[in-house]
Amino acid sequence: MKFLLWICVFFIGLSQGYVRLTNLKCESLDKSYIDFPECRLKVLGRGIIGANIHVKLLKIPVNKMIIRFITYRKLSGYHPFLFNVSKDLCRTLKYPNRQDVFYYVYRAFLPFSNLNHTCPYNNDVYVKNCTLDERMFSKVPLPKGTYLLTLEMNDGIINWVSIVSVYFDIDMD
Image (cartoon, rainbow, N blue to C red; front, side, top):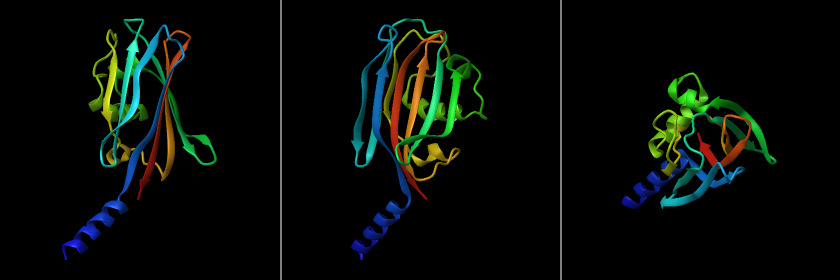
């Protein structure tokens, strides 16, 4: 009887779906402005994968940073899907807007990072053991599939300085 109960629990758990990180890439386009000493995925437990990113800011203080947030969906290659938003990070952190999709992305990563204040930034930025779960996508539901989220950073003047690419799978009902 216990065996049958465990089988039922197992299949109920499978039917609820999952959101899982699959790959992480960090690229510095301007080595004199930004560097990534750590950019990797780490297995935290059975089926739980966390992202660890260490962003070393080399020209401090950072008073202006433009972030471009783009989502791609994999069909036959990665194609732009749903969001292509550019924001002034310092202004967005100072005046958060609940109507903005970037607000929900920021709030999802906030518990795992030290990005909890507005500009200027005089220290390195860390993201430690960031995991994805279904609650993060409750406000922005995405269909089943493989996705790529890119965060492109601009120094606020003219140069694109880095690209962080986060690959993840969604399989929810």
